Length: 391
Image 1 (cartoon, rainbow, N blue to C red):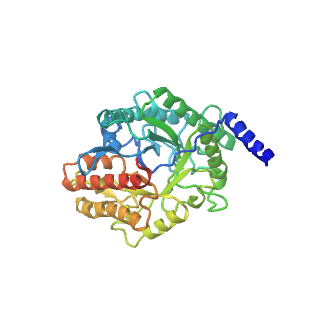
Image 2: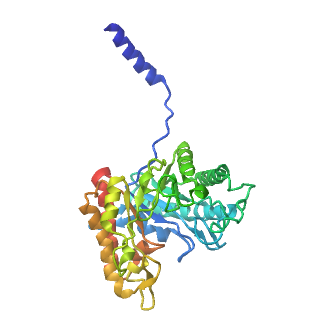
Image 3: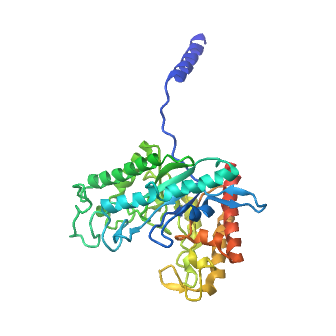
């Protein structure tokens, strides 16, 4: 018995004397807002544009911090006519990747403006309970300069890399992550943390799931490698597939730390049938431990939908008019109702997609219905978090 006691004490002493050098676990967010679209109007995410994402007023008039996380993503560089994800047109090179990093993380870029917005709120109500998380979108390392043309160059990116080799694509992706880390550190923000990186592609085709040109994409190798590289730097890897997007069942196996699913239901208004059944989305979210993306855009903002303005449906066809705004706003409320009815409120996570500027447009609109919807969204986001984190 004495020997056993001695062994226990010795073990405790050795444990207390052994230095612990564990990386912190990647952050899991209660809520994030998708921002950073640079090529759309208005072009610059300045502090004023960020403000309605950073804080809001409670029903009693008291100001409070709003989103925990800010996800910066972009699909194309329209200035140079290059794409960051698989699609029509030419793939982005190193120059466009750097250009996008500069827009977000340069000395006068979006992240600096977000820091100013946070500092302004902190001067009024004190520091946030936790630093606001920044997540940076990662471009696809696309094998071909024009993906639809399998005879187009694979050595187009720069630095002597050939994207026909998976290891060269990973070299480029690691360069991008390292560059973002360095640029963020140079900003030395007081209110923000670089929490992780985001797979911008909304689909991850895998050879054991849906084999669509998998030999040209290699997600089964690239996604786990990205996860390991992010974790080595103390950051997480995040992802949002579209409604039942390929790979959604395997996000954990790929090393992704947190994933949300897009219902894509908002845009089905006026579309015959039910292309994106909400019940199917909710069932998948529950089965695969995902969060939900809450979606809307300028077509649901009365203050933006003038007599000559039209908004797109789920197929991109300009269909919605000012007369559709009330129905579209009810669709936004339906997202919140479905989430609560499913028993996810206070348990799950929300990612807000509001187009390129729609949340700010709601908050600053002269229309009372717009501002009422903004208040409801804020109450929904904060209530979902407070019920379990006390932030």
